[in-house]
Length: 152
Image 1 (cartoon, rainbow, N blue to C red):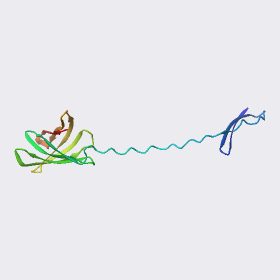
Image 2 (image 1 turned 180 degrees about the horizontal axis):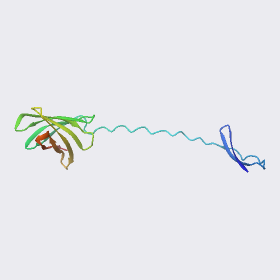
Image 3 (image 1 turned 90 degrees about the vertical axis):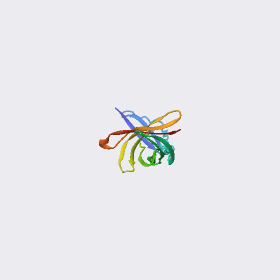
Image 4 (image 1 turned 30 degrees about the vertical axis):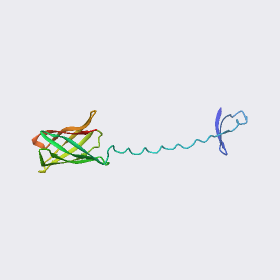
């Protein structure tokens, strides 16, 4: 009957097989190689939001209303801005939302009278423009197309 014997001697490890009827000397002791501890890689730095905290001029439409204004994308992924009706500059539209999903803005557009339209705008890139477009609605009155664009 063979027995396995594990011996450690001052940092050396030997695994020998011995027979109970045979008193052979154990095999030579082999040094144990120590592996370097595995270190976790440093976490990748968070990527900055492109154009974060930058305000850009946009032009567009809300239904039949022609708009001009500004939109700012903040580093915390919030979006805000102000637009006005080109044909009646007292018609002001305050815009706020979030850009948590790349290429989408969950948006609220509040008119001067306090009525708020909500929706999701989707980003489209052309050779010349960045375009955000989608439907925004205010309950029972239905949805209107909002499209704003700026030069790239």
